[in-house]
Length: 148
Image (cartoon, rainbow, N blue to C red; front, side):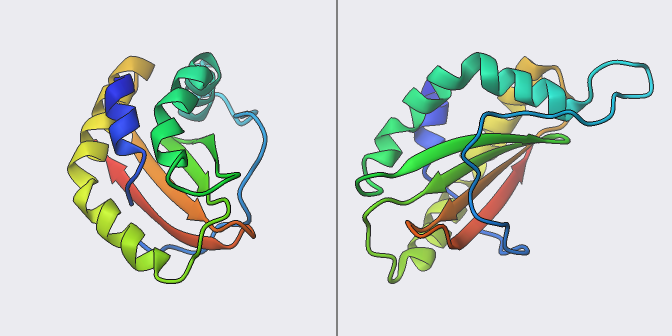
């Protein structure tokens, strides 16, 4: 799974509403419990992130090395959604969105497979992996989502 994460962290294409600037905190979720009193999917995903943070960060290192000095990655949890948040470092942004569109489109199958593997490990029927990119100034560039 770590190898799949390392390979897949470089890809994404849809252009939804632009999210706010990238987050910088640990994954947290204090939302409602499911009807049966158990933790909702966002809480389960947040737990997965916090338990596997060092492995997730290590898997992202090869991609971060190509994104300029000061590039960062963070991971967020939402209902049935695992979110990678990449922020470029010192890297020229001209033409970057077009390059990222191509990379994300080419990686769709791998992200879909990863979503299935992660869903199984977390214990969910469905999981969406969203990948977001921001430039060094925190401006939204692009995101895409992949569901198992």
